[in-house]
Length: 452
Image: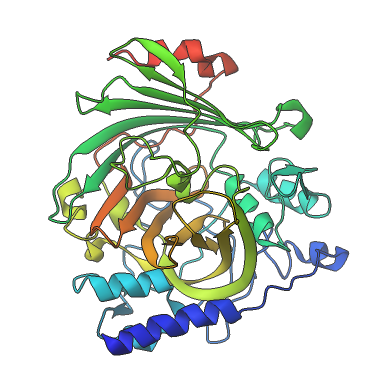
């Protein structure tokens, strides 16, 4: 264990030593998009030893056997495990692991990381690529980084010059235009017990609407509605959020419907470190989607790009042949169903500002260069100790196409508990073709959504 502590300390030291100096994007860098760089700013070529291949467009068509509307067939089902990382060999791979991953391997002897060949499967619609290239020369941060301007549809900052630019890329990234999903959440005890909370979510993404202009969407990034369907003691509750872009200028608007009282109430606490819906205190509001909301309480640093072993192409965790009890185990999810690959990620550190309040004193984000999806987060308490570790297990929903989580896992290293959000193996598949109006996301609409 003493040797492992040295490994962890060395990795932490490495991150603090990484350069934070980045020049503003130049005309020459903009010209690289779609050439040396992918349209969203990733390095198009592979790495030196070939363990990361060149990006060739990602998944552009559904594999054989996929039926529209069904669970997504694993395009890489024939891939074999290259090697596994566990507590015994962690030192060998520590330069490509996060402090949080090392802490997980140290705490749980049964936790392992099965590493597979790297598949750069991320792909997006062509119009999002084109919008990203157009945004690159004009997008800017405003209001001390709490808002964005001169950007629409695509990634605002494909060649980020700061941590704030990188996290904004995640916040506004493409996840479809309007989506409905049926998922489960489970707060798992240290002994492996849990109760499934059945949720129905809707997202209506204003920023990525075809033909949208930033001036026309009235500072609204997206509309979000979440209905609780089970268990009976929680069923009928509904959360509605109008997510604003600049949340310092105009905080997000949120309402809840309580079926017992049959009343709609304002919910100003649905933000920052307030507990997430039915999460048993294991997830904050801004942990949802790996990170969301106003970035104003942190100082953000871009620590650079790094090759790391990250969760990716997690089709086994998504498969409709898998029962929830096969996934949810004591301490952590079933490691045999998780898939890790070597990818380049942007490392972004967020440190709590002096005088501001949040239960996390520091967070370190690991953001996929091919999609701007946050794949992992190390979260520290206000004493500077690693407290929680989050993993975003992603797949390419190739019928859209979009790379997005099929499962979020938030581990609490201090309590030995964890929260899983997104279990959908036995549910209907995401519907990316819903058609909604703004009137569907008004406070008066909550009573209709809350009927049991």
